[in-house]
Image 1 (cartoon, one colour):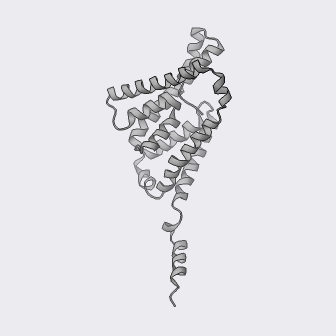
Image 2: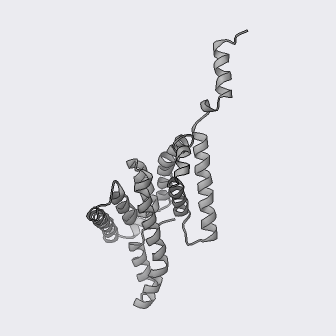
Image 3: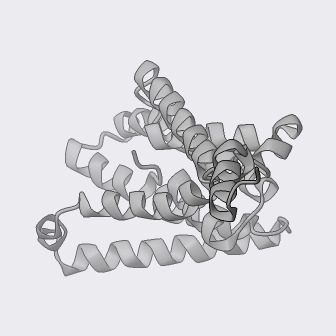
Length: 211
């Protein structure tokens, strides 16, 4: 006896994996990547959690054997993670800053920071184009070095729809220079005999990474 149309549809929907929510697998993979990044951060606290997670994601995306799955069953969930959840995370990160603390810096400091971000963004973008970097690489490098490191690269790449090839080089360079800054700047501060406040201003104005 044939099933009624509605019951037949429900039965097929429940038994056919292709009809199940396609975003669950991708979100689960993103959660695994975030957990792995946190594990790396726990082992090496100098490496920010967000940086470790994004670098792992880029490395996995660069492996040819993984690309069919990443572009197939995992794609819907990864799209949600890389667009909506990433943007939400950046908003939450920004909410962690107290407006009172920002206002306490004074207008001179605030305008100086804005000018520094704009100048560094434009200069990095210009240098990237002078070296004839392909695709979105100059823009992603400018975002990473002038704003907040790998998280800015990820946000800009998501907004632009950049591919893995364009994202890999900016993430690598931003991570490399951010890691070097952790080692080099304290040594230079000692050589230059900077006090704690001077070193804090210098590091805050020059180190692009967060997390």
